[in-house]
Image (cartoon, rainbow, N blue to C red; front, side, top):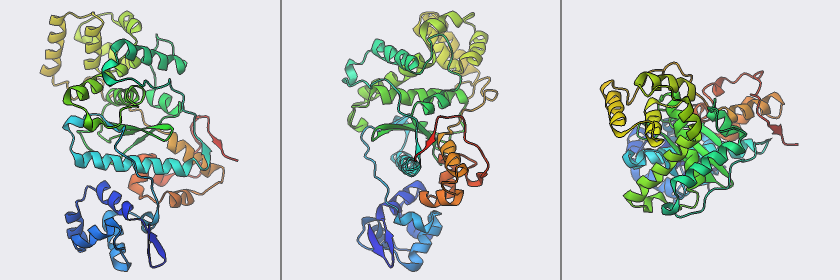
Length: 380
């Protein structure tokens, strides 16, 4: 961190802000009128922006001046899992990683005032990717359900709230990127899941969260996904999908719930399990309720009806939203520990980022709002 006038300046935060807005150095130079070479020297820490240039950067990037004097913990790429990585761009992945840094920064601020729920998950596997069998994955999924007080008969009503209540941070990025659904990472001793604002259906979001939970529990010992072969990368993604399917759809309960293997029957099952029709059809095939011909026929029907991207009932099942950060903020404010503005001042992030990562209503958070019924306690 370097000094500019009487103000400290962290060059890394300028890089983060530029990446978050999707700007190259060249584009930021064009928009700000500051030379690319000068911006490069700011980001490398060789020089610091002063006066007008700092104001220009703050305005163009729409970040408060105080943001640039904040020290945020950098995150390595190790153990960071992106759903849909194969089709996503490095630019999009970098934009998402910056939001993960911002989410961790918010957690660091809030955890000074409130004890977050204890991380309550089974011990993650520490095995070579190729030694992780479907049976081991299924066992992990059922163990997770048991640890969370669920039997193996019932659908999970609200997966997002359940995951948050068990100590995993879920937030949403201020980013619309169709090629990335979510990203997850262990940071210190807590798992973080970051969703992309893709206007996805509830059933897709639930599966994305379950998929990322699979990475957290199955792949925590993988240092870098970028060193994996395409074959191993496909295996890793398939394993997370197998975990998600078994967490949301325990075999025997699912089998007993299938009354009809017609398309209409699977539409009805979607209401009950809150899982997509395509995932239900795949599950039915895996547990041998559908033969190969039936499976192919139903998949062709999905494509013919244009249901690959948008299915029946997508608009009628309410979207689950993360609210742990929001509940913590309200607890702090309602206990007069900090005012809303005081809390925002400590976070030093722009409103659009706070609104996405904490809640869409955070910018207009009412001082009288009460936190949701999570077991949270102010630190004495």
